[in-house]
Image 1 (tube, protein in one colour):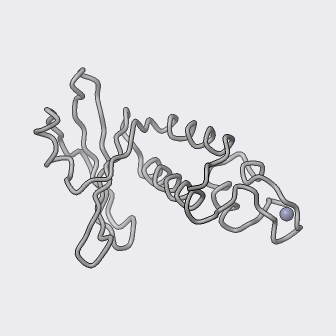
Image 2 (cartoon, rainbow, N blue to C red):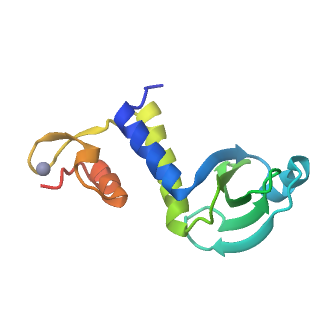
Image 3 (spheres, rainbow, N blue to C red):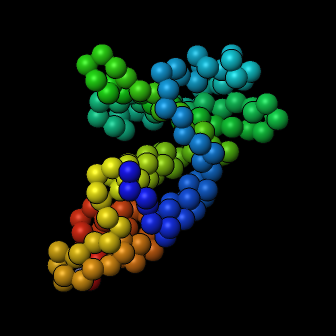
Length: 155
Ligand SMILES: [Zn+2]
């Protein structure tokens, strides 16, 4: 496993904090199945349909943490193998928008690519040949992600 550079790590932490992510859990059980063990009573408050191909809709739940604080959970599931599946639970301290959920998943995907697939934070621009850190290519989260994927410095 390759360590993610401090700058990228801190940037992602800031983005996740901004959207109110507390943690992500990968599980075989959905929130309703684990709620009894956890002593919580989740209520489904919404759903985002047709977001990802080959995945369930994203269901949004609200519940009270044991200390009484409001918690929100975005849940989706998908097959990982012919006879296996994964349920992702993203726990937030405020109600997540669809973009919030997408951004959390995008970050987790980039982290995986960097740790295990050799994706580097420095990109050599296909257009001008400059090598830059992908976070230098724009101020906006959506744009730095696009430029990392496209290997474009924004020139
Ligand atoms: Zn360039």
